[in-house]
Image 1 (tube, one colour):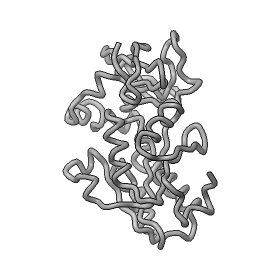
Image 2 (image 1 turned 90 degrees about the horizontal axis):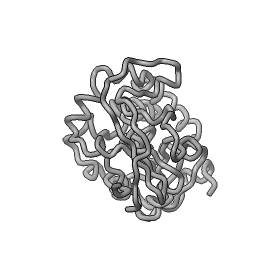
Image 3 (image 1 turned 45 degrees about the vertical axis):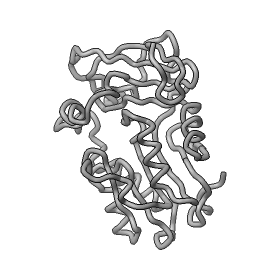
Image 4 (image 1 turned 60 degrees about the vertical axis):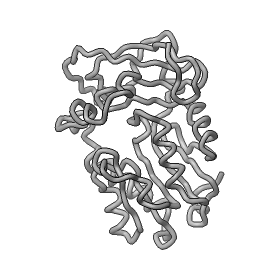
Length: 247
């Protein structure tokens, strides 16, 4: 038994999966087993589920074994399809607000989402722990709009993530992020078959609604969900977003 990184509660072994388990299984694509066991634990209190051993890896090992040249085979949408779709969703939701926004795409890879927003007149930049590892994100200043699409499930240290967001977000300001909730997808005393629990994609931190609510409270945010996959942290809703967000 170990302690939950979110709430400190007791975390017990949930199941073991092969390292090559990937999100492409959702599309019917399976690869050969790696023969490397990955153990997921789950908190009895808040429900947070995590791959404790991988969460303790040094950054270099993530680059070597997960975010390497083969990564695109396990997440083919990350290069362009997903960032472009997310950029256009932001543009469609927050129309005519470019002059009021200082935006950061946190965990934005090579920056395609931010580049697309900039082409539409936004003041936008990106930061990624692997692409911009020599930059301290706190040196970027403060932002009234932060996006973090498909980031939370990849982080080995949830409190480092939350501390960054706390320091980077202005008041008023919003963080819109996407990660699928495990509620209803993971059951105690059952095999971990959920496609989203995929170590080869780097999905090592899986959140329940309760765990996100607790993290929000710990860092002075309010929390809302738009759907099981898209969520909001905020202090106060800034004027540019009030037409799009009702809380």
